[in-house]
Length: 303
Figure (cartoon, rainbow, N blue to C red):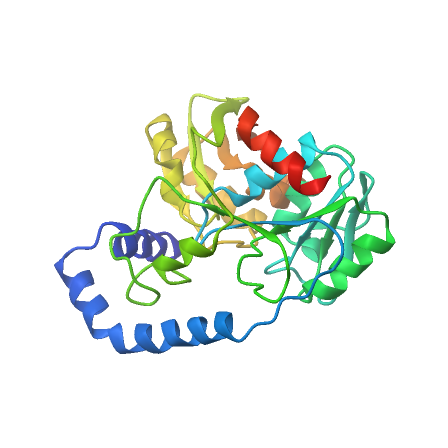
């Protein structure tokens, strides 16, 4: 069921058929109301200066655009930063210090998958999750942060920050907000970016599969799983679950048995949730390299 629903969502937003287009048209009144709400939130927000360099990595569309890998690359390049994020779908609330100076202080259920991905892939990582970014920023300052990276912080209009927006290669079919389109913020909000990061210009991606096997089955619970389409042909099957989904060992074993698979192929984000299941795993390893110009830009903002 999850697989079919997620495949439909991807089609609706990016490759709609005639029925999807009709549905999108009838949802326009809700889209208009949503767009006005976002506009007024931006218009009436007053910026707070936290007296520390803050860089936000965000996007204005639904789903993934590569924010986490780019944040990770920046944090690995420039030391003494603190990564702050909400910790979506974590089984905890309030402020949680996930990792300080490379020491992981909690488990993935408490931190959320993305926070744990940072904790395990950034050298000497400092990661805080909190619904309230103000409190998290103050905590990071107390702990000696040199600068702060806000994962998905564009919509925090009240925080004075340097806004980097990622413009994904795959563009939604309609340039309108949800639910008629895939935009969380109106398309023209790109003008509020301090810098627009574009793949192959600002940064470069490369992927490789660690421990591949002959009969892999692709399993993903990331936003916009269409980004993994290139790996389908290498696999005997594929399953897309909702973003941040908490996998159960039994359901993965069932999928493996159904396809007589020799391993499951997953991203880093999903691996942190299943690494203790004792399953044979092939890992999609994404590496991001920052351009020289982009490094200079970031360096100028954290000095």
